[in-house]
Image (cartoon, rainbow, N blue to C red; front, side):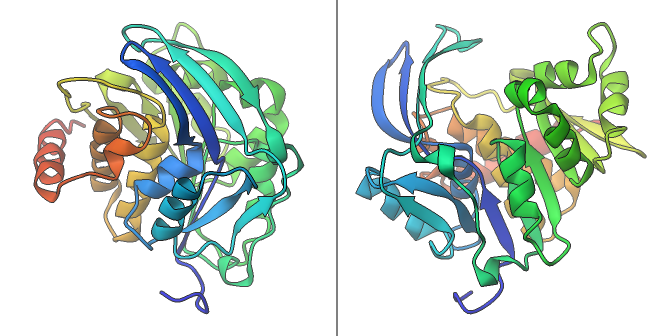
Length: 301
């Protein structure tokens, strides 16, 4: 696909420079952000990256994203500091503490899509402020399949905008704790939580439960898959964004929702085996096939 054609799929979200601290060490200046992980979980040159970085954005990160995105016409570069985040993980990765957040130039970000990005078949709205997600969606002149991700903070500080974007989405992906918080149902089963969230207007929902797998819901059906049991978890940063990117790539290929969720879970299993994005840029076809088949065998209705 060349730059004078409409892009089939867009990936929008945060792009950051991260510091990750866990039991294996301290990792400075690694590529982070919801859009980065999601894009790198898709096939090279399959999706158009939409986002913003500062003038300090490392050249190696810029080149990696540029080699993966269709082009960088929708990556805005502004004088100043790139969004930066630091986090320290518990020994068992069950929780993390945010060490710092520096929004940098992202505080002034107003996404403006290039001409060829206004018509797309698929749109992944990665975890970022719902107001920005709405700004991107409102510029789309086609009717894409919209995959939406968010997290607890925006349920608290931007609930109105979040509910607007949820109502316009085709698939909402959130984890179990976020689902409980969004539904307000603390002592209910997963089906009741899902029913409450689907009433907000999304066509379908995936509730992720980490090592326990994930469950899909729509008005007609539900099914679950197990998470692939990796031998050594190195870093869980970006696993949910990678999951969403894997789903997107599979949907672009024309796969159904079962296959797409399995693909997302497969990519997420590679993400957590290395630091930051390193695990998802070094995936062998044979190992991908093996893991996908294992997760496929766990599918239950």
